[in-house]
Amino acid sequence: MNKTTEYTAGVRGMVSLATAKNPSIGIYQEHFINGNFDYAVRLSNGRVVVSAESAQDFEAQPSSITDEMIQRVADSFKSL
Image (tube, rainbow, N blue to C red; front, top):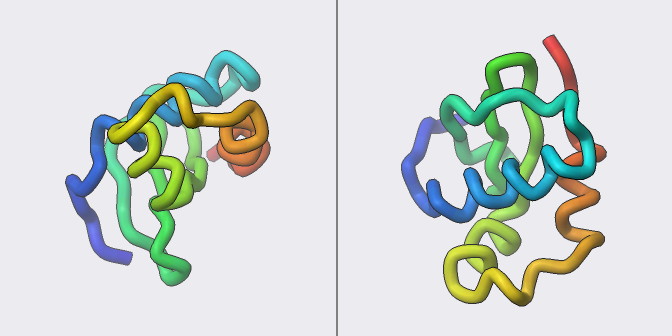
């Protein structure tokens, strides 16, 4: 995985929305492009995955983010 700063605002925004669904999700620290070309996000207490599409959509048009997109991020949470 390669560390990146691509779509940081979108990744952070999706993590923030997912935290409302799963309060166990920690604080964003950094993100990486994974083998599926999505973003693996390192948190203060674990990790989540944010799809590249979701991060891009959040930056371009936050109103286009669906509850299902947010739930996928929340469900991907893995604690340390």
